[in-house]
Image 1 (cartoon, one colour):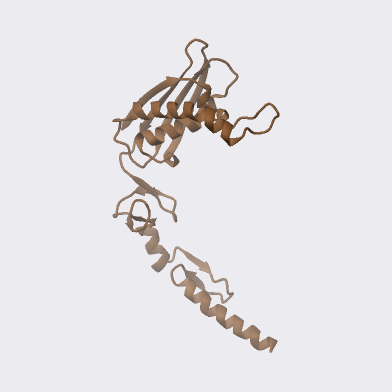
Image 2 (tube, one colour; image 1 turned 180 degrees about the vertical axis):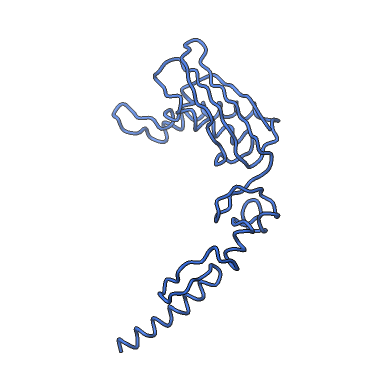
Length: 209
């Protein structure tokens, strides 16, 4: 199990509203104004997170838990608004895509004198994972479970068990759309449907003529 604890002073720059706020007229700020004046401060906070996480781990492409406690100087801000910056900073710090992140706890308190954001980053499973696009199960991203492919991990998106069922099994049978009453299995269904489609088109042409 890997764990890392980080903290940084709370700042309005940590809130997503600092980048996507509204002007006095009630309309959204221009991208130029929000990015020029607020982004450097947000970048500094993200760099702070990145440096604190450097050397921690090891981390894997698998579920990562975030426990976040936000101490704010007042109730003028929302604790949940720091999520975006924290997630982006942790993502670059540990090198794990934020699609694997889960928020286990988000809590807040008021402290005018020492506003602070503390984050516990943890991971239980110590192996790279991949979700099968067919059965939606999380499995180790190895050639034992997935055939070699073209995704970022060099594997196919469908696990070997589902790939086998799609082509030779009976688990993936569906009624043929052409109305022939047959059950088609993914893998040969496309050719079967095209063959029957050509027959239907030929019959319609014959009737119309």
